Structure formats: C-alpha cells, structure tokens
Image (cartoon, rainbow, N blue to C red):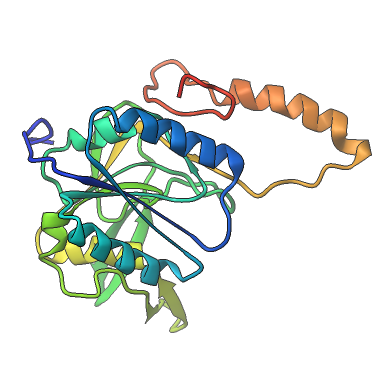
Length: 249
C-alpha cells in the first residue's frame, strides 16, 4: 500500500456505535478501556443510536459527525472486542476512504468478513477472501464493519443517504439483501476510492451464548481453558487482540 504512511489531517474523531437493544458487559468494558486510552491522544466525539435498523442508525450518526466537524468516524459494533491499538493502526493508512480491522463471522462457516467483488454477466459476484495473519494491510472490495474507520471527507463525495439497504436478484433470480455497509464499499469503489483491511487489528466477534446444563458444566469449564489456548497467535502470525479478562487491552 503505497501511501500507508502518508500524513493526514486528524481532527475530532467520532467514536460511533449502534445497537438494537443492549451491550454485553465484556464489550462495554473493552470499549471503555480503549476509549480511555484514545482520549489521551485524540479529540473524541461520541455518536450512538439504539433501537433502529443499522442503515438508519448509521446515517443519523454520520450527520452528528458532520455537525461536530469530525474528520473521521470510527464505527465499532456492539458485539466486537477490539485491541486498544486499533485506532492508532487504522489511522496509519493515510487518507484512505475506509479501513477495517479483521473480523470473522460468528456462525455459519466462521469465515473472514471480506470479499472481492467482480461483475459477471451484469451481476456482482462475491468471492470470499481469506487474508493471512501477517500484519499487513490488504485492499478488498468489501470489508467488515465491526471495527471500521471512515474518512469523512471521502464520504461527502457520495450521494445521500450514505447507508442504504438494497435487494438484488441472485443467480437463481431470488432476491438477496445487500447490507448498507456492503453498498457503502461498492459506492466508494464506483468513485475510485478503496477499502482496506489491516490484519494487525484482530477483532473478537461475540458469539451466541451456549446453554449450560449440569451434565455439561464440566465440559464447558474445560472449553474455557481450550479457548484461551486456541486464541493465541501461532508461529508466523502477527496482530493485536483483546481477550475478556485481559486488563492489558
């Protein structure tokens, strides 16, 4: 990435989040820990919304960012655990339009949330990417949105509403929902801007809690130890991440 170290103007940074109902305590503690560290270095503005759909919430949040003359909006999902270095790392990408930490789905195939999009016979085809955990920054067509820094000067170039959900037919003619964050990345691509994923920023995606019965409690206790071991970086991998209970951030 040629201009990764390019100096950029950083004014007020909006810390943005939206939830439909409530936030898990581990997520709340993690976000407060990070914000306390960022507040020592940056001029922060807080913008949040609850109880409405994601696209609506994001558009309302962005308007608040503009009101406070922010240069960047840092969107953090209400189910994401992020390292305290995340904002510092994402700001290193110069004046790129969008850069995100690396997030995986919390179900299905648990794949990374990033795609290469190519037009085939007049329709967008989405090809899932698996980025190496090598501490580098990669260009993608569509990245995750759980830990995403947006350059607001670039965002102003787009037509309103900036976030919109749409539907389009798949290969079988069935309508599929295209989320607002996906459409945002595609809109940036259409005006020549790029989306990036910084693999140094490893985001934890809070999964669906399991039900613990007396007959399974012993297995769950063992699984907690195994989870601690599995989350450790292996040889050749790089990045920073946050584990609940790790007060170092």
